[in-house]
Image 1 (cartoon, helix red, strand yellow):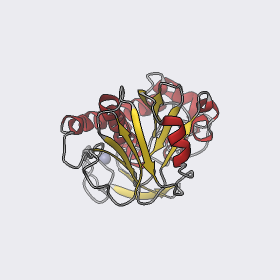
Image 2 (cartoon, rainbow, N blue to C red):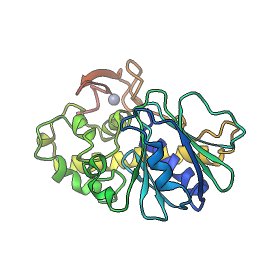
Image 3 (cartoon, rainbow, N blue to C red):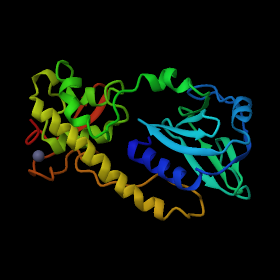
Length: 273
Ligand SMILES: [Zn+2]
């Protein structure tokens, strides 16, 4: 599943290669995704517009058109964006294709269809169900200082709160696990029993681990001219996620694996308290 660093990497590629381009043609099939994909509506709204911005909100992407509406995209569980020439055959499960004035096509491929692509008319962003419910951006410089206020009075385990998109938007399972390990905090620790300074530390570790992963994604942007036109996927170095049974990189004790909020949670029972 694409996590925030992948989505941010995709955003940077779109900013570099799609912003400034004019949409010439839109093709696709009106399939059911997280929301119904309405190709006719996208053709009416986007044809002839120029893309003037590429933004990210949590794990959503917004391509802003010069008409002040936006194309809202989400990659769901299995979505990918490809930037290809029309000569390259479309992959199976290509649901949407935008052809730009430079001849390239932005293609949305999503076998499992948990993603979405829909038009947000001018002003619709503020009231969109998915966007309006999103909490703070994890990379907002104010986030660590805000965590005691956002989390502090709640009785839920910190891991569960980190994944709650209404509090902080865009942290997935991998980065919640890694940030808790870095902060030396047990994932099942209840927020209301955690000192404010430890919550602030957790917020800073979230930002560090996300920023490091985004920097690793920067390599993919430089190598972008791959024949497949694929981008945004890269391997990151992880300390504990996927390492259950291995020695903890900090203290050497075996990494454990618990379930919390229905999600697999790697952690070190020795040095996370
Ligand atoms: Zn340890």
